[in-house]
Amino acid sequence: MNTILEQDLVSLRARIAELEDRVNALYQQLGVSSSVNASGQIDSRIIEALQKNNKIEAIKIYRELTGLGLAEAKAAIDQIADNL
Image (cartoon, rainbow, N blue to C red):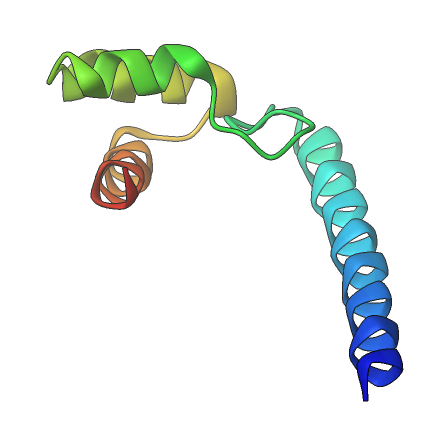
């Protein structure tokens, strides 16, 4: 049974890597960057701003990184803050 679980895990990791590559390609095509770095962590400046209870600064940083509008950036920051 462990072998099946290990095979599933390897398969899922490969699929995640493929999806990450596709998302990064989409970001490049759109000419924007992600607020998440290569290791899957949110930009430290966003986390620091949220820890200081400064959502406006976090939204500003997020918009600079992604090129998204205010409403989209606010929604993303709200979600990030909820998950911290």
